[in-house]
Image 1 (cartoon, rainbow, N blue to C red):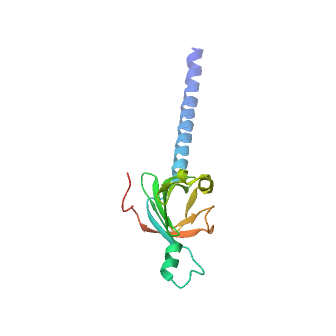
Image 2: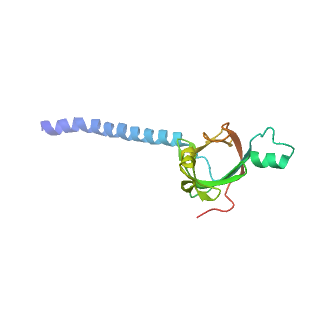
Length: 161
């Protein structure tokens, strides 16, 4: 008799505890969803122009040397054209920044170009800006000033497999 009275008194407490627990779980799920927000759409082609002072009298050469164009493929690879030279490799996103690792330079593996080339091969960075553009930076590049890149297309023209 006493046991059933105690259990009857504990029942609402247990139910209230379940409600509080489920409410806490729901609050955590909503908090996680609100923080993740919409994801940035990295894939596509992006282009920017680095100013090239003292480029001589040929504006075409200056434009080519200053152009930075990167295509990010859905499979995590990229193609980059910078300072008139092609590069390619893989990328991943870490803490909201895309990190690009160059695997090939002038269509040759970085590993085949010697230890100095490998030592200079630090990850390139793409940081999204509030207006949807990207900020490109190369910590080991010849010009370490970040370059603003605008989206040219939302999907890569030739997705690699």
